[in-house]
Image 1 (cartoon, rainbow, N blue to C red):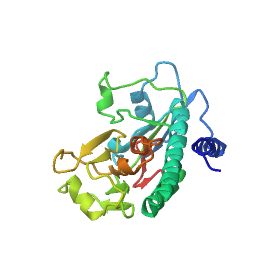
Image 2 (cartoon, helix red, strand yellow; image 1 turned 180 degrees about the vertical axis):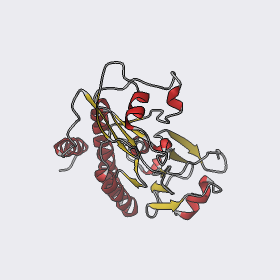
Image 3 (tube, helix red, strand yellow; image 1 turned 90 degrees about the vertical axis):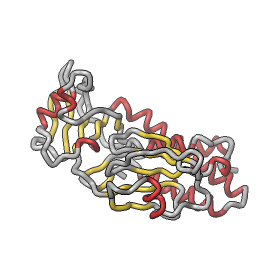
Length: 261
């Protein structure tokens, strides 16, 4: 018999059994992407983000808004987050099956397939614009093992979650949030009041989209719009799915126009 406890145990076991990239040496940092001098650099106590930027020589073609700081200390919490999302998807799939909601069950299976492919990156929110890092207040300390990735600018917006099919749409600065949602039809089980906007710097915002709570929001190129599953259709035991799904998507990042999943 499949139980919620066995689902959670299976999700954790499968995740930690999977192969992860070997961590960098404890006394190094790594810089990659659109930089003139990618590679490993010696880490020293007191080193800051701007020191890494200077060492790697960020290219003029880099897209600082989508740059990613990947931190070894964030790996384990994000492993737990991913395992939790997989548990919530499977628990809600069982609940949907019990409610004879085949459409919702199929959606959750599609979302599970996406989450299984998402890497655990260790990405944390940080200011990585080389000019902003000249300000002492934004120039955070580096940790040993940190990796900085500077991608090139993409040209799309993605709409994921409770949609008929995941969409990757051309970015247009003249379009609003609802314009993108019109291009990517919602699933019958979608929530209709809010979406989660994940900006390319990894920050997230829950934004109202209904007539009664509509909020203005500026979408940057490379952003993700996560359409939540209607909370009324979710299992009482796994109703954090949408919040946790948005948090996991915020750990992903662009690699020269393609994404880490």
